[in-house]
Image (cartoon, rainbow, N blue to C red; front, side, top):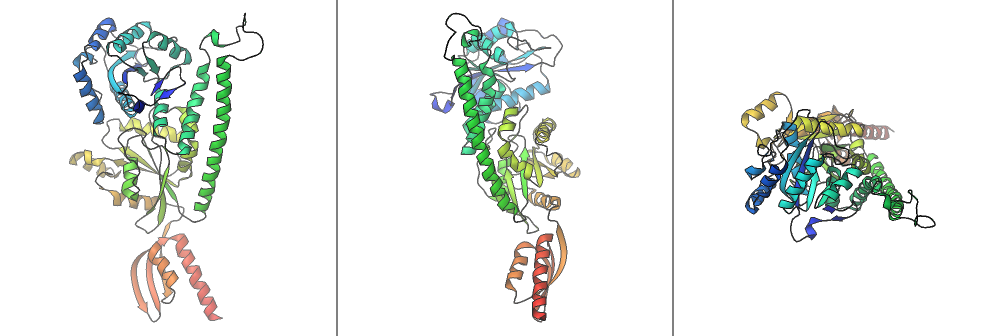
Length: 487
């Protein structure tokens, strides 16, 4: 997972041990003065024992929503830090991201400032404190739950005894670890290079010819300019590859759209249970993991609704707070399934204490994709983790509630999808079909719900409910038969 100078990534799985990380939370909304822990905080951090580190890693594996350090010496109160819900939620989520990247958290700290420091984001005193925490715990990484400018990244790496990553670099690394298909790998590499390119600048005058002087005149390129040219060339190649992927996907979609089979897309915050629900509905058996961003590549599976209509259900990448814009752009090919879907299922974690904030973050990304006007069904998942009283309160509000783990509520969800599809609405019809017309009877059996059936002579009288397109097609076929027999 390590990034050195933003140019290389070494998966932690290739190492002999898990990388040890120090988390740095940054709260720039606070205007109140907070006691700076300084050297005392670093001393407290140094008392983190191997046993407490092991206990903390176990807490991370349980997927707890609250981030609590095993060693009281590293608690916020011991470090002189006052916390609020938003900061705790951000750090808890960030620790889950670190776990998904394969590292173990050995310490954390929080910096509150009214404005960012241009040189280091967090200020010189805090940098010194973090250096002490990292050294005391033999940390391999310092991870910032905030984006760093190129200058800030360079200054922090100069001052700290280990590698430094910001939030976007961490998310990009996780995406790189989880991408399995060629398309997913192309999209991740494109996002990484687009993020890296502006960070080649500002790395010192020694890397540029612009300053002039002895040894800089004449032909040749510096490493900075060579790197920039190589990245630009690779970006052009990747965009061409992804254009080919889009063309193939567009051709596949055109073939699908030649038959009236609507697409319904699952969207939602990462780790809301989308893939588990997808598996429960379709039996697809795709990877369902408690780790963030386990699903990167889109999955499409056919699903039959209670009305006998068939749809294509699409599982998509999860969203997250402050999702890097480069990822939204690079994954545009994957997210085309969301743009083309007739109905969106917004899957939410019913047990998360931060559900409202997660909902707003998902809607923010949907707004970037310009799909907020599409019909959406809000689905609260993981109701098996709620008390009976909490579940009753949700049902009273008329919200679709399910448990992908137990299967509770799936019938209501399928009915809600049926009701939301408007492109090929359900209609009631009375049909009179010759008993000898096996093809028409088979189509009715397969694609409609038959409420009443009676036989009269050589015909079958049927009361049905089914898609308008199928009813019209059956009627046209019956009318042609009548015309032919009349002649």
